Length: 375
Image (cartoon, rainbow, N blue to C red; front, side, top):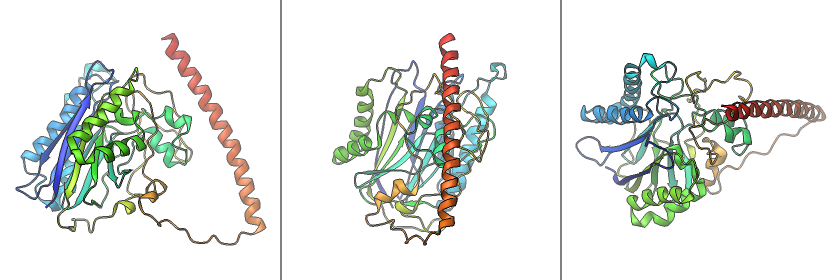
C-alpha cells in the first residue's frame, strides 16, 4: 500500500504547438500503486505532438490490459511498453517524409510499495525531492549527459550548447539507450516525485526544490501549478513547452522486496553501471559521438530547443549532500617522486588536449553560427 497525491500541469511556452503529453493511472485492484508517464515530442520532427501522444496511449493500453498489475512483472512490462511505442512510431512514420520522422522522449515511473521504479529514453527528467533537496534519478540521454559522464563540468559552455542534442530517443529505429535500472529506489513519507519535460530546465535545481518545499503543504496541484507559473513568468523568448507531473508520498506502506531484490535508498541509487552509453546517429536532434575515448564535441543547439540551464547527470557527488556525514574517503596512499612526475606529465598532456578540443569546439560553433545566419 502506498498513499499518493498526484497532479499535473503544463504550458505551451513560446511555441506554436504543445508537443508534450503526460498522464497517470492507478494500477491493480488496490494498494494505491500509480503509473506516471511523460513524453516530449521532438520539435524538429514532422509530428512530435503525435509521437508524444502515442507514448501516453501505448502505456494506457498496457494499463487497461493489466500488464502492470503484477508487481513481479512490472520491470518487464515497462520495457515491453517502450518497445511497443517505438514499434508504433515506426509503423506510423511516413516514408515520403525523408529524414524527418516522428520522435519523442519518454519517462515512465511506477510508484508502489514505498518505492519508485522507472524506464526512460531521452532527456525528460525524473526527480525525487527530499527534505528540500532535489535528486535526479534517471539518465540524461543528451550529448551533454555523455560529456558530463566523460568528466566535463555541467557548467562548461560546450555542455550547455549540447543540451538539446539527443543521443537516444523513440524514433522507430533501434533504441540506443534505455535507462531501466535493476533495483527500485526506496521512497520516504514526505518525498515528492517529479516528472518533467526539458522545458523545466528554465529553472535551476535550487529553484525547483524551493518551490516544492514552500508549496508542499498545499498539495501536488499547487506544486505543479507553481513550477509551471515560474517558467511562464521567466518569459524567455524561445521558451519550450514545459510539463510536470507531481506526486506527494503521504504514506509509503510496506517496504517490499522487488523481483530483483531489495530496493536501494536514494543516496545509494547512483552511480548506476547498467546505463549503456553507446551513441546513435539519428535524425535532427539525435547526434552521433565520434570517439568513445574522448569527450564528444558539441554542436550549436537545435533551433527548435531552448537551452537555459545545465542539469547534471546522476553522480555520487551530486547525491552526497542527501546523506549528512556520508562520503568520507579513506586516507590516500603515500605518493612517490615517480608518481608526482607521472602525474605532472599527464596533467600537461591533458592541458594540451583540452586546448585543442576547445579550439575545435570554437571553430565548429562559429561555422554553425555562420550557416544559421546565412540560412
